[in-house]
Amino acid sequence: MSRPVSSATSTATGQALTRPLFLLELGFNVPVRYSSREQITWSSLLWQAASFKLGMAGQWSVELFNEALVIGQTVLTQGTSGRTARVYQLYGDGPSWADADGECMLDGEMGEATITGSTVTIALKRSAPQRTPRLYLNPPLCNHIPPAGTQIRTASGTVTLERG
Image (cartoon, rainbow, N blue to C red):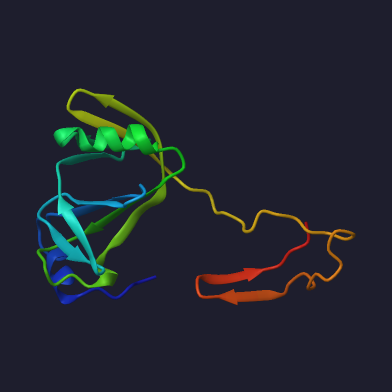
């Protein structure tokens, strides 16, 4: 299945040598968004230039430079378990990237974090599909339940009711 990309990305991926740009989003209380190159604006969000290494062989991980102990302090005070993590990849040189140019390489969550001196290493893992609301309602507690198969549409998606 093909997807539309901008002419800048099409040109960049057609060259013999490409220089990918990685974007890292960590879902702390205030989301942390880092770019592997310069500071950019993509998908209407600001991504700060930062020094990080992505480990993609086998187990995903990210190693961040703990500048002024900020990331280490955030990890210690807010924790990482179950918080969202996303990694995107773009090609070419901006600022002409379209929203569709970013390829989501990982949409998951953070795992265990290790703080050693000037670096913080966080394990990343893919999230399993979630079923919502993960609650079961059955008679006699609830007698007015719509039939299975009923679709409820909201701004954030569609929920189909199933029998438990």
